[in-house]
Length: 200
Image (cartoon, rainbow, N blue to C red; front, side, top):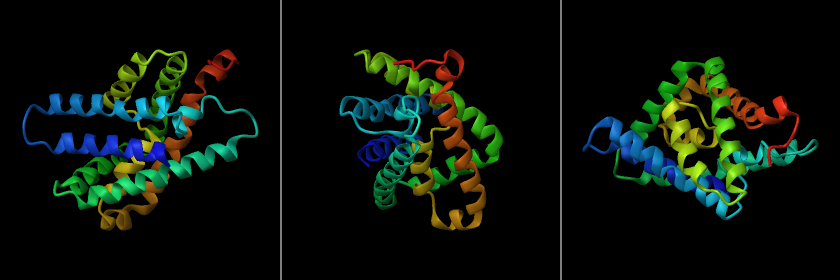
């Protein structure tokens, strides 16, 4: 749950940077993506359990544990999404625009793109476990700027969107989300699929 809270806070900052009326859009996007690194730095250094920080290192028989981690992450993000709804900034509208853009991509393409995020996450976490945090600072902005969906960050944006939008697009949202959870898992395990070895 704490990992979800950390990601939610980073997502809050990302949405707020997009809402900022000053500066070029590119600068605001870059600033928001760099600030998002806070989440992964907190997760790794406090040894929290994040779905995409764990999926590349699970063993057979631990899929249930991974499912519980994702559930906890979603609950943590939901708590911060409630805070976003109290913000005087128009974060709900920004979150809806973000979600609309995701749904326009569609589940198949979204699932494929999310493989890139999983690959980057496992690489960053592997280096961080060896004491090198720079890949965390580079990897997070990289997957955001590439538009690779992250199933925990995305769920914060989804939960921050207006409920009326959810009611109108529930099936599409669930289909897209399921696809990116699978895609992230595939990307997180890409090393093992190719090398047959845990990259730790």
